[in-house]
Every structure is written in C-alpha cells, then in structure tokens.
Length: 497
Image (cartoon, rainbow, N blue to C red; front, side):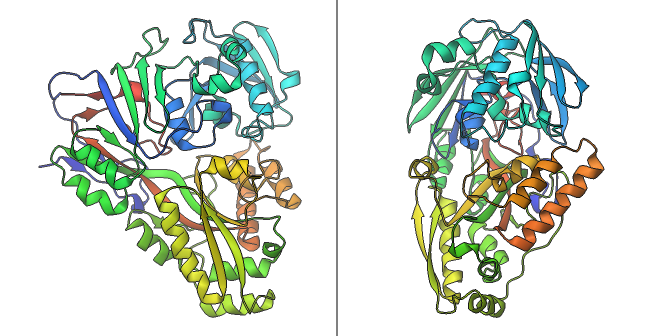
C-alpha cells in the first residue's frame, strides 16, 4: 500500500504532495536517473530562457544568493550584504570557492557575469537595472553592485538562473559557443557528457565548497513523449520523471514501487497577441477573441483535471496577485465585437506554438473555438529557438511562464524584452519601470494591481491556466523537493537499491 499524503493543488496549497519517509531501503545507489521532456538549448546561464535549461544548470552553477518559497533570501556565494544607499549594494563574498576548472571565485567573476548578461539579448532585460559601469570591485571578495534606480527585485534577479556566476577565465578561454556546450561553474555537480537529444550526465564535484552531493552521478534522459516517460519509470529505466500528464497520474500511482509527487507552482499558460501586428492592434478584436474561448472547458479537456483555470494575469501565489476571475465566455458578445472590429466576415491569423505536446493540444482546442466566430487559425509548431532565429515575429502564441516575482513575469510586456508579444505600449512600460522602484511593499503592491487592471482592459494576453508541478518518483528516491519552479537541488537527493 502506498504511503502518500496528498495536498491538492487546486485547493491553493503552498506545499507539495509527498511520499512519507520510510526506513532507508537498502544500499545507496551511485546514479540517479531523471527523464525530462526536452533537450537543453544551451548550458550558458546568460543565454538561457527555458526551465529545462535552468533545472540542469542549477546543479552546475551557484548564484550570489538563493530565494526560498515565500521570498526568503539566503546567502550562497555572497556571505552577506548591505545597502550603502538606494542604488548601491555591497556584497561580501565567500573566499573558499573554486570553479570546476580550479580557478578561485572572486568579485571579478561577479561583475563579468552581470556585464555578460547585459550584452546578451536573451538576458539583457533581466539585468537592465544594473549600472555595470559604476559597479566596482572593493577587494577580491567584496563588490559593490550599482543600480540605475531603486530596484526592489534585485535579490530575486540575483537568485535566478540567468544570474548564475560563470568563471571569467573559462568563458574567455573557451569563447561563448564552446562554453555553452562545456560549462564551468562552482556548483555541486560538474558536466561529464552531453549527448544532444539523448542525455546529459553530471558527476559530483568532490571539491564543492558547500554540502557535498549524496549521489555521485546524475543522468537526465531526454524523452519528449509523456507516455514514454511513464514507461521509463515502470521499467526502472528512470528514478524520477518530469511533466507527468494529467491523464497519466492514476497510471503512475498504480505502478508498484512508484508514486506521483504533485504540488503548487509558479507556472502559468497564457495566449499572447503581438502588440505590433496591425490586425491585432484592434482592442475590440482582442476582446472578441477572449470572449470566444470557454477557458474552463479548454483547461478541463487539455489538462485532465491537473490544472485550474487562470483567474488573473500571473499565479495567485506571487506577490500582489489580483483576483480578476475567469475571463467570461460569451459567444454572442464575441461575434458582436468581431463585427465592431471590422472582421464580421472573418479573418486568418497565424498561431505559433512550441514543440511540446500540451501546446499542440491547447492550440487545437483554441483553434476550434475561434472558428465559431469566423477566425481561421493556421497553427505552426516549432522549437522556440527556431522561432527566434526566423526573425522573432509572431501574431498569436502561447507562453508557458514559470517565475515567482511579478517584475519577471510581467517583463514580457516591456519593449526591452521583445519576445512573444512584440510589446510596444509605452504607458505600460512606464508603469512597469515605476513599480520595480518601490522598496515599500504597500506602494509596490498598489502599482502591480494597477498594472493587472490595465492588462485586463487592454487584453494583450488571455490567461488560460495555472498548472502544478507533477513528477513520478520511485519509492526508493528520498530528498527530492517539489520545487515550484522545477529547479530542484539534486545534491540532497538519494536513491536506494
């Protein structure tokens, strides 16, 4: 009989369902195998934009600080810090850290990492508030980070994947392209091998400055199909599987010696409209497309009960969330607005979605509903990296986000971000820039509530679903946390024979 305590996601829990710890089940194994849904696009933290990248990189690199659920900030490579004024933070760094190449970690690596992030189009918007030219090294283990203006999300940014500290010497010696395939960090694991499209293997960093990893080897198998990941768990080919589909939850729980681990997350799924597209510039059209969708029906059909319909413009467990409610389904109102927008005879738009199974299911459901109001949708499915390389233009898309800070979530509406929505609303950009400057939590909350009201009025996007994290685990795995962003610290995880 399985020993599982379930705390349901849709009840608004903040903790995961988990397997009750039992006695150690024999001898420790030296290899933990995890099955993930896609290969990495890169191992360069400043060039990453996907959860699949960060969940591996988190175990190879360290950040200055770490942020726990609830916003608690804890030291990591930085032992402590202090605000010298509203735009200057002094960090006191550890002096016992070495990178995987044997080089000591210093303040020079910190400034190099942030400067590198500012120069990369993928991460430039994340670091836009840092004034790197006026930041300075005080001594090898003390650094002053200067900001262009007060920045309330500084610690969240520095705890994020893009702020993972890289070895300046390793990057300069290898160059960006080679470093992206052979990363050098200071984390508890080192890259052993990366076979594109097949697997990534890590080995314990025995010289790690912190708690040494329990398990010597970690292998990520790339298995795109959700059903095949379940088979891998059934046959013992994997100890942990990511992204269990709602339709597979019962099947996993029926596996002898395995169980589902599910919990609340910071993940959300939105429909996005290009803010630069001439056709979609019509507010009436965007509202028509919103009214034409039965969001509850879409979420129920596509997620099989393993998600809840979004009731706002970012996850409800993120600071200053405003409950707007499920956007109403009103087909007659949608048709009326289509006529008002000048498209009563219909139109055709292109819908680009990522190469995930869920994206395809959602796109087809959305396509069918929009067809009722005369909108023909051409669905194109391709990897995100291919989309950006083809000019980064899009009319309609899906955004699967995963963040625990409103400024990071809402950055997609900032013209400096530029992806998916092709943002160009200067009023909204100004609102976003002002909100991030408030260190006072009350003022900051009010600013973000006003932004959510504005988004609801403009309807540049349509919230669809808040989704839990769902794993399948062998009962012999211990210490695997159900992290809301799927960025699990694997050094704590053990697996028994």
